[in-house]
Image 1 (cartoon, rainbow, N blue to C red):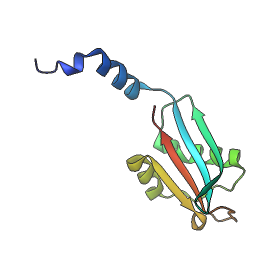
Image 2 (image 1 turned 30 degrees about the horizontal axis):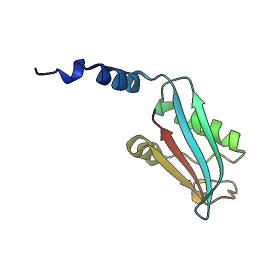
Image 3 (image 1 turned 30 degrees about the vertical axis):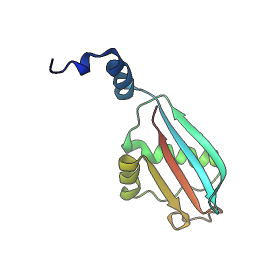
Image 4 (image 1 turned 90 degrees about the vertical axis):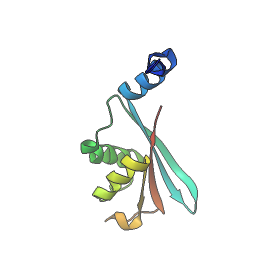
Length: 108
């Protein structure tokens, strides 16, 4: 009976799609005074790779028409561990007209 759950069709369907999903989505929100002022869902037909996270961030910022923030190792760690990361105005070298840029990993 050991390992019976892993042969269950539901388990194979749900976790098989979760582990082998080849697309990713990141929900980007520009927030001011606790309200979402602008948002965008970034979709890419590839698996999320943290070594390419700056490329994803640059594409998102280009689409939202904002400057690209400085990306630190702690930002990537927060995104990997908590499925979200927050960039504040101090993370931007250029002028940033919002309180924060919030990126959230959409897990399907």
